[in-house]
Length: 306
Length: 126
Ligand code: FES
Ligand SMILES: [Fe+2]
Image (cartoon, rainbow over all chains, first blue to last red; front, side):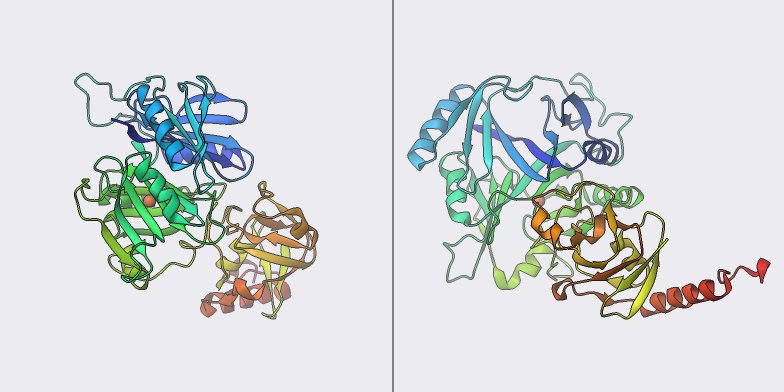
């Protein structure tokens, strides 16, 4: 079975109270634990203890965690990582509250990655017996779950290959310089099941270790528009959208949290399967890739990381 | 209320109480390079030529290191003037007027208040 999903994103924020207002009051995540300078949060349609961790002090990403199905998967990933040339260390149960033991390592892109097999089961907020479609008292946008993250890399190919060889993911779409240089990944969208991406990577000078965005899933275009309206009410700075990407066909808005970390709300996207031909994008038509309608490049979207 | 003078624009804008510099610019018809408006991306770097500003929220060392701060560089989106200030936007910040009708109104209005002490449209005291 191996990797199940991107389980958590642990990010830095300059002001914990302001971040809590954003992630709880505007985004609608539920806090499950607060210790010291950290808050742990989950979406209403997630069952594990947390998917987002906010840590006060700075800005950017501390680490991301991937959940595997079984404890034995850890050995398998450890062995494959060694073959790949990445050294892993064992993390202990309790290194992260409510998270099992697991593995920790640096991706070639310098991001800290953790792999674990269990988190304390909190349960779906709607329950799992005769449930209604959503909780009655959702806050703000009411995002159901963390969907994916886009990480920056100085060089994409090596980290992309890591996710393929070690995590068993497959590239659903890739941005390449042009069709004569299809082997060079400028960006890549990697899937692990049948979503268009569980993790994505984008390349550029000094991008390593940086966060482009973390994304929350929403239902559809209507939910995206409503999310945008709530962002306006709550004075959330918006970077891009509402729009639809041709890349993954996701409907989207990008915006910033109170520390300047970029978030996204993301809906739809097609069903990706392992034998689906990988879609290629060339740099000259990146504008079309980023938006189905206006096709213009947005300066800040491609330059701003945290 | 502080006066914000923009070098190269030959203009002085009245900022509102607690208003970050970028908000003053956007409200008065100007635009400059910015993204997050939350002190996280560092795109809105400007230089304080004179006067004092303070941050309305912590700015991380990774976004604006102290050696730049010591040279008078600030992030405009998190900086609130506490005195009259003179600000230089670097060339790559591309400060420009994008809505002259707003700018002209604001400047006329500032002038009016300065000379008569009466906001435009306030007929009660005229
Ligand atoms: S606009 Fe991002 S730091 Fe000011
Ligand atoms: Fe995304």
